[in-house]
Length: 159
Length: 108
Image (cartoon, rainbow over all chains, first blue to last red; front, side):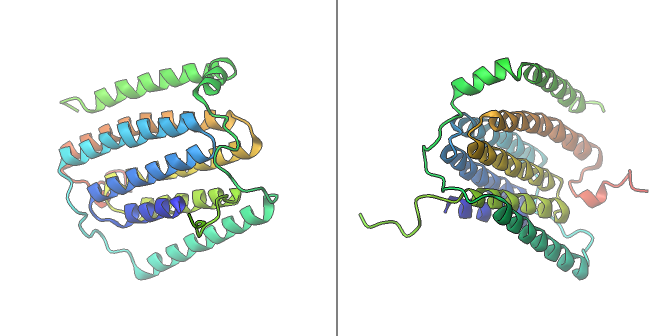
């Protein structure tokens, strides 16, 4: 049911012409995904998803949309009917193949029940993050710093 | 309370299929949309789909490493959003357009 909600929101994200509507749909997708994470036992990531994605990143998106006063998309160069159709067909075929592979290759697993395995508490993730994955974690901080500086430089007055 | 019409356990592969569906929708948006911001949001959608499959495999293997990868993907997505939106702002300041077709200086 939640997956259906996510897919609906994603379709609306792709099909809306107005960026604000797309952004709101994306928030819907992220909320649904956060609940799915919770079902899969990833408590910390569900919280992080809500805070980082649905909170911070989407606020940034909406802010930029408002700032640029982005209106509805105007019709650009018309895509040819053939290309549109074949693209849809390819996508559907790709999806079918992927689903088939997933169904065929994966050993039959028991269903997911809520709370069957809760591994991703903040404590466990923290322990792993600061022992096994210490170096990537530190590199991440450098990455964030670079992104920060880059964003400021790019958004300066005179470029 | 009568039993719900849908089962209370969900096969694990459905999560992976949902992930594939979301990824494909992201690709479709990336290819078909003409607005820079919407294209950017499609990229975020793809990253989210990948995260979902990471966490699903993590659940399957009863191993927490997948969560760490998803966490790093999230961090990279945040950094990418910041830089990308700054680039979009700059492009808009210089060209006064958000349509991808109009930003074609690099096109040969």
